[in-house]
Length: 426
Image 1: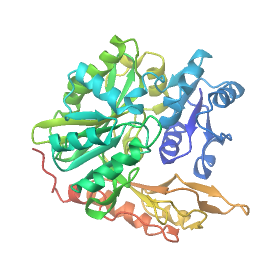
Image 2 (image 1 turned 180 degrees about the vertical axis):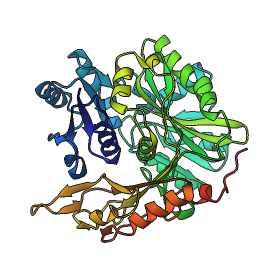
Image 3 (image 1 turned 60 degrees about the vertical axis):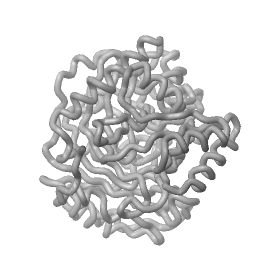
């Protein structure tokens, strides 16, 4: 089977890495890929990920049998629809179904119809409505841009003026609206659920770290690290979330004539009142994918092909490594502000000397001399596994210490509290 992976980040590098280990996968093409992916697969230029005609041309030229769309932007733009109309099997939802991520207001409507436990929310189109909603829900204030924002459209703050300023910036955009939500306490969980439009098949839960600094300080980012499994999670949590959240959502999407095919990414908080959904995404999350796929033993290519072709019920139980996995993101200078790019990257070969550790590329490129340089905000994801979370962390951070990128920064506390058994639920 030939597989095309659309995207250029560490998530796509993790997917490609898993695909090339699948015996049913003969070849992997990535568009556009990155220098790390290029060592494993054939990379094709793709200047605009939302250019459906260009993606279709690549799929046709290579006669691929499965297309996996990594990021949210091409899904919301309808790239999957164009490919399906041309006869390709696609892992990724239609544009209509991708509204679960593309519109937080639509997602809330679906949650309400499916009786999914979530926080109270108000959709606002004026700053006066925002102020009233903030008064009704109280602090901390949660202000979300009602659209795609690469994981950085959310502000959670006690500062009323900061919340209003973020809302005003969102409303100033064409057609701008915001969702003001109830603050949900408790540790957060990320759960990926594969769907073929009917069946819901969960992967192993993970936890990511959105804030840029240690102890959850600073602004939100696309994600600074993650770990899996969650030793502190209540027994039966995954089955409960499938029954109460994933399956009702997939059933509701099918009921309204918009079947969901792909991965439903459920972000939730384990509040004192039980699990509450924070948001839905419609693609594998980054950096959670890096740790979830590090533990998945079931071959990925056949699994995603089954989801794309309505045969997920062929899989009763997925196989998982008992190992724990940790990933730490190495970010460029000034991220999550305007990142500095073009800095030389070195030391990646030394990482191979750390047991189980490896590097996934995200924002990297080759300069005119063929040297590896930074090309984005989140530059690398350093991954390691171990028999327990303590050893997985030690290996991951030992590997991070070998990476040389001037001005880079990373969090030093990824999975730290979990490794010390300091996370409590309820």
